[in-house]
Image (cartoon, rainbow over all chains, first blue to last red; front, side, top):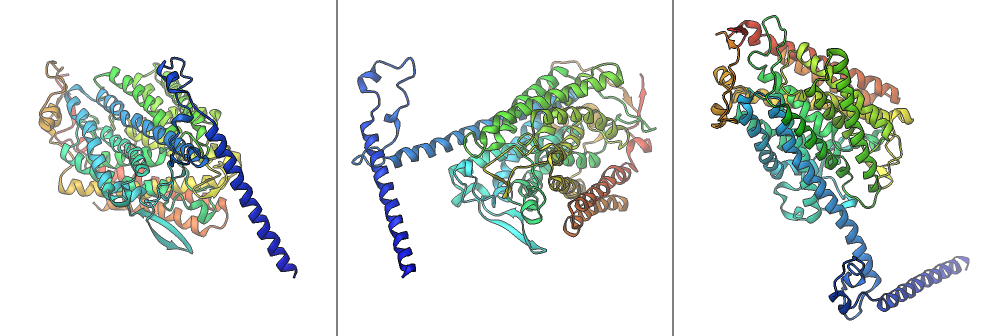
Length: 536
Length: 73
């Protein structure tokens, strides 16, 4: 009897709630019908103050007979939110795309005039090569199993991740949908994700060209970049961003919120920097870089103005790189874009100071190229933590990166005896790894991207704010970059060395690569100064 | 060639050590310790073993056609 009474009461309550909701919606619908926008006559007068444009008249009506309803308004609100996020993500992606111009200027400026055309050509062509590789299979491997992204309306077609079981847990390995963007992935939200992720991947590819400039065979560069864009980069990016096993370290093993890399200090810069190191090891140093006793000679670049302007272009593009990685400007904590942008600025600033002051103190002069590299070092380092740290943390991260890049450049050249004409290994490799580590130290636990990160409730919090588990997750990411990404890149490029050869002939290198490799001089009307003669 | 592959193996071994630690160590500090050890082993491969292997017959060491003598300078 009691049970029946309870059921009856529950049913009555539900009916009452439904009825009141219908009545409320109906009342709201009536209110909407009574509302009106500016008249045609008013609009015909023009709207210089902007007060008549964009009103209730602009909300689409799904059923003309019923007129404007609450459902219509709610649908428009939803579309506005997703529209804002689409535009934000696309625009920031366009900014990142423009970074290619910055990289080209920096790298060519730090190389000699006789190799300018070859260096610019590599930076130009890598865009198309990377895009093609990513369209064919790279995007599918990286994002094919990412699942729904709430800020972009839910990219449901990207839902097939290849997984494996280990010690009672399921781990993601690579995505399986989205090759050639066909089938269900012919979808507007998927296109936004593709564009944004593609320009990130291309940034990683162009890092390698700097470290191997002035002696890398153009055809081998094409093959190496194609493989990096199709396989190596997408694999690690899947593990970190595409729902793969690194991002599951939190949900499966309780390590913080899993590997956290907000905009890619690890995924983009460390992958590019470590691949650059692998290829530079195989290609070997430029003619004349090292003397027989192992001491290094400075081989100066030809255009410091290109270097400086290129760095500013990169700093501008970084406002796409980091703030864009919220994948939206509305909803799920995306308003943190303001903090992300300021953090990006600050770390670039302190990175510049760090490098400039270090060089000034140790060498007596504020070296221009190292100061420029200091700016990039700060920006690279803040890329991973930009979404999780406060301004003080970002300033510290930047200044450490600025000093680190100076120490690393000297170490790579004088201890490892590796020739890196632009300092790419140090800027992107060393400072990228520092950026990944700094998340585990400085993340302050205030970010809130929809209440969870990598499927774990709460905010990313580093060791200094009470979560050593996050530091452990970041260390696993660093170990994977060193032990897997570097090793894979080395083996792939060793195979290319065997089958194609990585390096141009000595005579071509001495003459300059512009004519032998590209058929066109960078500066045809210039008379180039004669260089030291190299003994046969 | 052997030293090259040895360097690569040590680099990869560091990652294996880290993964082993993450799954086997019980506390978070144990995991951090083993991850750091794994990173150190990988760095040994990358910073010490591989450059030594790749530079063993470097052209600037052997005094081949690319050694700078700055003739005419």
